[in-house]
Length: 117
Image 1 (spheres, rainbow, N blue to C red):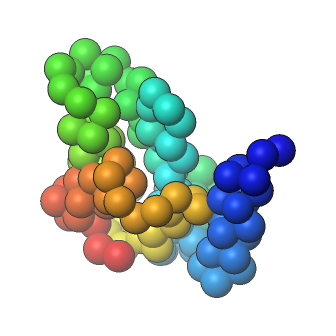
Image 2: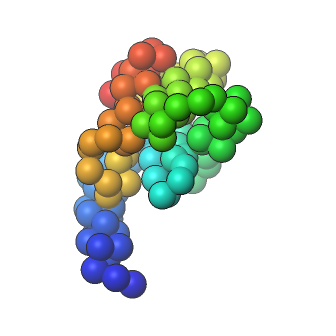
């Protein structure tokens, strides 16, 4: 592994030591690849993914726009899925990425959709 990936992994582990999701307040986990962005609502007590959204979903992938704009749509999509499950609060897990750019846009979109963190 290169040093950049090791650094992100170390940051990720430190974040995960401090935060954990429950059934009432799941963890909103973000994974960012070069091309796409993926988010999951995770209940860490049972280890189950409650809902997921990504920029590869047909309705989001069909949209025109930058990766940052699509990230905001992913945030709105996960917020919509969370509210349909009756969830309004989440714990945000940036996954070792800086809270900037696409990661920040996902958070902003989720907040606009009605999630609190």
